[in-house]
Image (tube, rainbow, N blue to C red; front, side, top):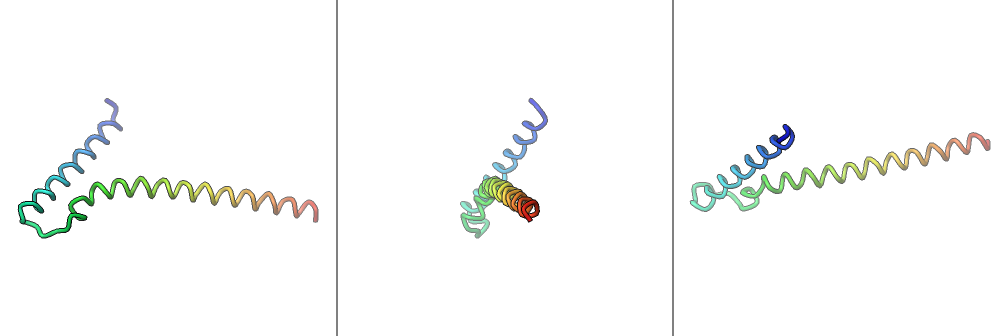
Length: 80
């Protein structure tokens, strides 16, 4: 198994352990926390992926707008 795959599996394992630990604390009544906090490690990982995809789309969109504006300015200067 490659190092990247091993790292990802360790991360998933830690998330699972954390969710299980928070679940046990919630169910046994040892911690008075909301279910949102119990599942937060799961949502955090999903949110990170979604934020990365959104930032990539915004970044590529801004590069496209910049390049289009730059080409337009170049045409104006030549027609001048």
